[in-house]
Image 1: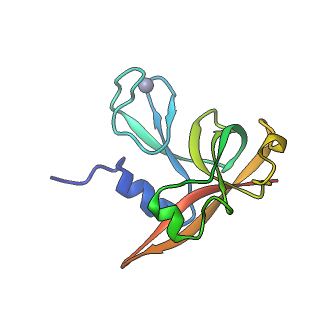
Image 2: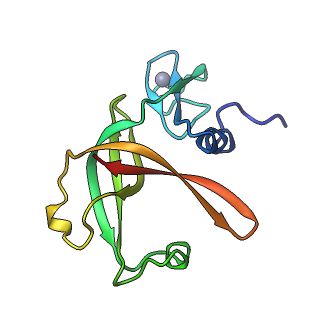
Image 3: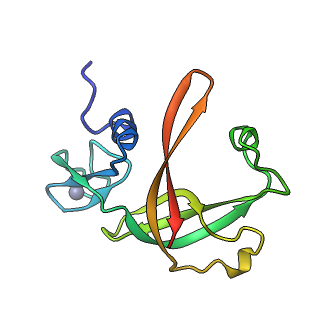
Length: 138
Ligand SMILES: [Zn+2]
């Protein structure tokens, strides 16, 4: 089976090149991130790749002090919490990611609507190097 042009593997490959790509439905114009081969809005299957500007604003966030093992490995714990959020991109799509550059010790001072820009983080887990999408508050 041929790999779809609109798979998460392709999306991750773009991330590794520091490109944030979405799939845009040619029928209804909806943009999806990560890439989707089928539009969940109109079930259209004609997609095209579009490059996101990587700019947006913070739509929701949570400060996590007890994270998954992957985050603990990186040194996050009760005393070193991290912020995870949902960013609404300028293109109108919402995407989750780690939020950098905010004061996690004062979560109540983190503001919804804070402008953020995409940041690409390379992390090594075992043999595997992957690039993760994060956002930095401006
Ligand atoms: Zn559509």
